[in-house]
Length: 263
Image 1 (cartoon, helix red, strand yellow):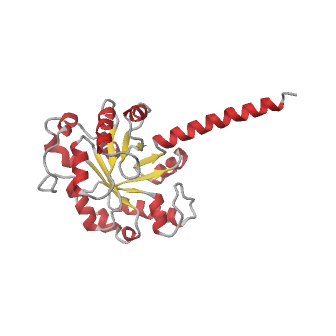
Image 2 (cartoon, helix red, strand yellow; image 1 turned 90 degrees about the vertical axis):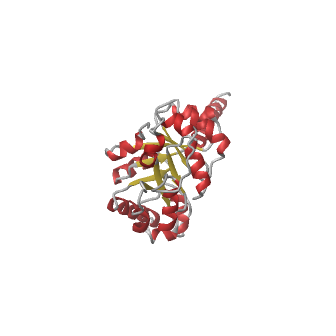
Image 3 (cartoon, one colour; image 1 turned 45 degrees about the vertical axis):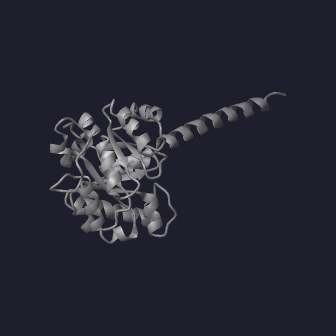
């Protein structure tokens, strides 16, 4: 089976830089896949992507050395199994709040006897290889999102779940859970930042990976220095919007300055 490159990187202590895809397009997926990301996550929760979009996006990503991941819209076995069958090499599962939910998530990603994933990988065999079923339980990356108030009280129970590779922090929902406004890149003196470091410390204690969503590369670098294994910043939609806004604003500013010299 094709090796999961980013699982290997994290085991070796190398940071993983993850990109985020919200636009349902093979063109934007292809453009992002050529920019040097270690992995790309197709966002099926808050992005505009459904399964019919995600499949060709996975095929596009697979033409590169980028590891394809997906964030599913809920801890629902059917969707998890289907996107894995499409060749996805890792799942980020939102709103995992307790041990039972963590077990349900992990077992949906794994074939018996470790889980209850149904066999029929279809494209998984094409992308992963003919021995996919022999190694998928180990190679597929399984990250549970810690972002609810309940989860904060169950960190060790969640993180000690057999087969769980790591956790992924969604700072916006985590902020909401503890009474702060949803946003990324929280300052060090904020309650959310304290919870972020607490989650990270529990992940280290349980010897699993930790990932986090960020707004800027500078903040992502800070999170790597703290000890996170995987960092995400921005998204295809945000990069496109920010680039366009910057260019247009610059051009309009130049035009205004030139007009002031007209007399």
